[in-house]
Amino acid sequence: MPTVTVRGRPIVHAKQEEQKAKLLTAAQKLLIEKSYRSVTIRELAETADVNSAMIGYYFKNKEGLFIALMDKMSEQLFVTMQQVQISDNPLRSFIGIMITKFSINRGFARLVYDEFMTKDSQLGNDFMQRFPKRMSKVLPRLIIDNTAITDPIKANYAAFSLMMLIITPFIAGPVRKIGWGISDKEIKSPEWSEHIYSLFMHGCSKEKN
Image (cartoon, rainbow, N blue to C red; front, side):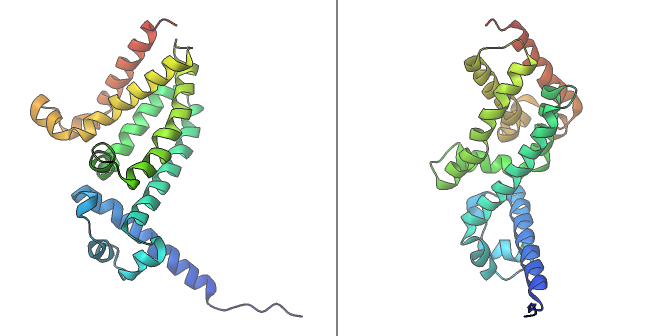
């Protein structure tokens, strides 16, 4: 019996994937301009140029859309981590990549501060599973392999400290700029990345196990 092909289905699927991608891009773009809680369904739909009903259709609600955005960013990050591990200087590469990602995704730093550091929210819990929990299984091992630290507990402490060195300048922007006169341009520069690397590695070289 010959196979019956349903015409048009691949086109429909492609259209759906395109609309989902546009909504994810819109969410990422709006986060640069405002907080997660102030972003509306209508703004997301208008920015993506799709019908607002599609947010519920593809993601259930606004929270589902931002969770999908976190999934996308998390997968991209941990694919990159595989490349970091085989680079000539994994920790220097890691620091540079993380600073670049926070520079490009400035709204994500806002999301971290607004939802995950000041509130107990479901979105915050989802973030914890997708980023810190996953990173806590990868970064301490990278530190043990590339520094004088051999104790797993101390490596975990060092990993957390390194993440704070990288993230804090982004989530504490007003304090950094007004209090210390350090511009956005400066923390995106190779010099800043090298500063973090040197500071971290100096501390690790003094660590006694």
